[in-house]
Length: 487
Image (cartoon, rainbow, N blue to C red; front, side, top):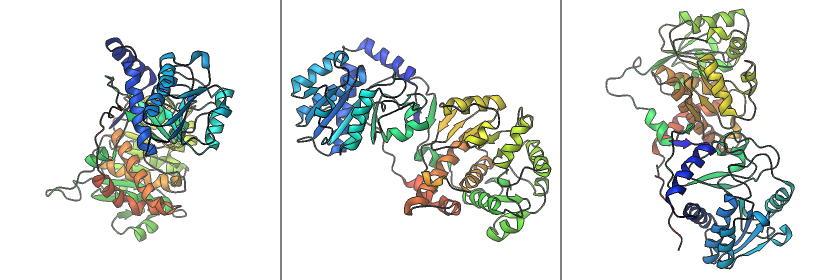
């Protein structure tokens, strides 16, 4: 499991290391890790053309020290000083001693032919977008052929929220030090960070502000049935979704639940005919949830409408002592009557997209983690806030940021699939916040498999759920190691 730590948490941990190590030692650890990753990405050192975008502060120093290491290995390194008077003195001296060159002129920095460009403009303390001079240099870098690598954090991205207010460095890779910052995996920052490489610099970190599950974490939570299990012990999930006129949501949600390893799925609703035809494995009734029989969790809302009958069904389900997932139309109804969920003794999971989220009167803004946490605490529920990087927040503040998925999942019906997956996990007795996070991860992996050949439709995701489970269980787990020292 990857912990996500705020900029303040990382700075506090760095200050402890700085107090007990020689001056410059921590920066050289970071620079060594940075240079090592760059060499691995480039595949060579001799003849490698590197341009450093150097701002004031420690990120510029990291870039300069890494540039010195690369120069000693045979790379041709140029440092573009965007604020020459405030460039890191020791790092600048190290680059010059190694034989690197420096300039203050973007046109003379070789950005048009660089093989590698390192962004050391601003760091975790930076706020707002890039200033005009830095933005001009970044534009030249983007127009050139070089691989774009951010030092610790892409300049212009908020370290804690991923918000981007203006121009930012569009990294293909980010080499981050000590801990993964939330802004690298959530909000707009996720799109600017590219692939994230974590370099261990020996920090002793506190509990993370949020977490990101790995394939191994999810696989460990998807236990195989044992010799003593039967269809009832594996979890029984109830689904109320779709309608006679629009049965698709019911078909997709039920199919996803069936494919997500519960022992039994019971469907109750007016899409019964379509669900029965698509999934003979489900037990189907065209009545209300109370007519379905015994279940261990409910999924309610996708495609079910927002009339008085739909509200009555939502109230009926939320009045039970069972875990309930509320999605789509049921979210619209709940936003108008939040008292139906507030204070429930059993777990409740809400799965809104941005527009559904704001219907509750909650502010979204640029801090998606903070917004999800506020909403979860307000109603005492788990909130799964859908997006490019889905955020899951529990009522106790436990938070996950999902790291799987594909933009191709932004199509009709995929949310119904997600609801079925999470509902099935709830029925097994899994903790609600964990079930939402595990379900989002599995759904994202299935979407990636379904999109391997291009555009997908929601039923493709349902079909790929078993393959996604297999992928999670067979993916190699490679432990992180400290980077080797460059000599």
